[in-house]
Structures are given as structure tokens and as C-alpha cells.
Image 1 (cartoon, rainbow, N blue to C red):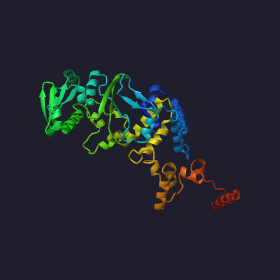
Image 2 (cartoon, rainbow, N blue to C red):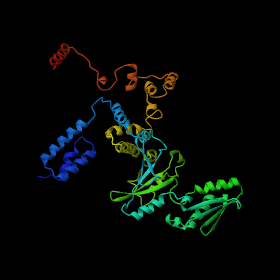
Image 3 (cartoon, rainbow, N blue to C red):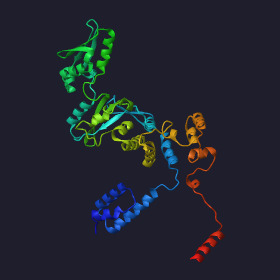
Image 4 (spheres, rainbow, N blue to C red):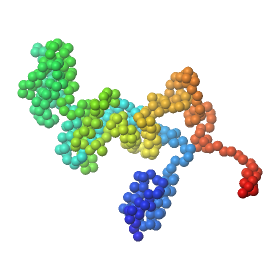
Length: 406
């Protein structure tokens, strides 16, 4: 007799396995339509596999994880991937990307946002959102030249370029006037805009040109390119941008990802970026931890390398355990170890030993590195087990005494 979903859930609920595994087990059993005998056999085999997959006590998980990531890392290439037909968008891959992730760089070389839409099947909507996101500067809508005789800057706009970007000359004029404010006088004549500095001088003219070239008339500042690609049956937007975590000086100033998420057509639950520090800033530390795992696995997988996800998860957990993203290096995890010898063995040996001597630090020799240095057994595996030999005669006497007492 085929069991109901409720019966399967009741049987699976008491098992000491992760919740995600329970849900998958219930889903597969309901789909297959199992009987009581089949369910018992499935549960027995799942529990056996789960016990086998568990890490044994005293296992040197850190060393194993380091070896498992480090060895395939030697086979990684140092190349850059270009999106098909788009020279402007490129993604750092291979060893440089893996180093970037583990170093928790505040300014990765190629931040890319993957933007999912609520209605991903509508190509026109995708185009509209792409124009809302991509920064429109003066170079996209016209040209600029300096008239030294008249001590003015002339902006020639193209009607076709304005139309393609969904802008009007009035909008451009208003934005320009707001950005320049009291620094110059702005005049509109058809598709031509003339800008005259308030204080006529070559210096103010050059500064004004630089200011005008940097104005964003539409879209999100620092988003240099947006590419639309069809993935499965929906359109996905890939946005290349520039963002440094140090740029956000106030809580009111939004990051590029926050600005994208505020667009109504964007699906905030599926939109992400490969900028791990920004993920932590916008979504929190758990999202950053998942991002480290995902980015590292994608980088290794793209190179055809098969590394067990648990090694990467251990690294991600170590990097984020304190509630902030820390690098695996002297400025992060390795530099904050309690052991003086472990810190000295990694980098800046003399500095660490000198500082420890000044402070009068004590090394309790509890970790792997420091025990290897002093030539003691490492407190892992068999080195963590202490055996005490008791003569059999004493055991027999003790047992005899307990029996007599009872």
C-alpha cells in the first residue's frame, strides 16, 4: 500500500539528519509512491550514507580543506572571460578570482551584477530596465567642445541618441543646470546647450568640462555597461559597475545593488552581485557567506575542477564567523590567531615574535602549526587521544571489590 505524504513526513520527522535532507527525502518518496517496507529500506540506507559522510572525531578538517583547495588551485589558468560579442564586459576567472574571494577584496577587479526580472520573458521590459540601470553620460548622447574665443562650452546633442536612451533635451538641460548650479550659466538653443562659467578663465573652463563629462543624466552612476542575455526561457541582465565599500560614507547613500533593487520590475529575491563585500553590506553576513561558497565553487567548476563543497563551506564559515567578512591572510584569519608561533610561521616572523616578547605573551601550543614547530605530536587524529595503561590485576581487584560491596 502506497503511503500518504503525511505518513512519510511523520516517519522522516524524527530522523537526526539536516532539515533540507528531510525535505528532499519526503519529496522523492511522495513522487515515487513508496510502500512502508520500501520507506524503511530507504531510511535505513539514507542513515547509513549520512553516517558515512560525517567527519570522524579528531579529523584535521582545516588541513584537508587547505589541501583540497590548494592542489587544484595549481592547475587554474589566469585568464579573463569576455561576454560573447561584448568587449566592454569581462569577468575575472581562475586563480586571480579565487585569490580575490579569499582575500575578501573591498574593490574586486570586475564586479558584475546578475539582475533577474519579475517578468523575465518580456524582452522589451528587459531593454527598458537596462536603460534605467546603465549610466548615460554626455558621450552617449552627443559631443562637447570648448569655444575659447567665446569662453564657453558647447554641447551638441543627437536627437536619435536621446530617443534611444529615453531622454529629452529638456531633461538633459535640467540635470545639467542642477549639477552645475552657481558655477556657470546654461543656455538652451534647440539641440545645442551652451555653458558659460560664472568667472571666465581657462582654469574654470577646464574644470567645468571635466565636471560635465562626469555627469550621469540617466541610470545608476558607475554602471558602465548592461548586457541582456537569454538564460533558459527568461532574459537576464548583467551589469558591470565600479563600487568601493569605502565610497559609502553615509547611511543615506545607496550602493549600486541597493539602487537596482529599488527598481519595481527587478526581482529582489534572485538578484545578486559577485562583489562579496557589497552582498554583506546590503543583505547581511549570511548572504555574504553563501556568496563566498557560490563564487568559489563557480570559479573552480568553470576550470573543470571538482572540489567538495564542504571544504569551501569551512573556509566561508571561518571568514564570516565573527559577523564580518575577513580575509584568509595576515590582515584577517591568520593574523588574528591566538598562537604567537602560528602567526610568526605565516608572515612577518620577526615582527610577531618581537611584539609577543614586548607584551609577554604565552603560547599554549594548542594548534597544528605551533606543535609542528616545536616537534610535539599534533593534537589531531591519534595525537588527540590519550591512552592510560592499567594492569589487568588491578582491574580484576576493582571489579571483585564492587561485586562484594553489592
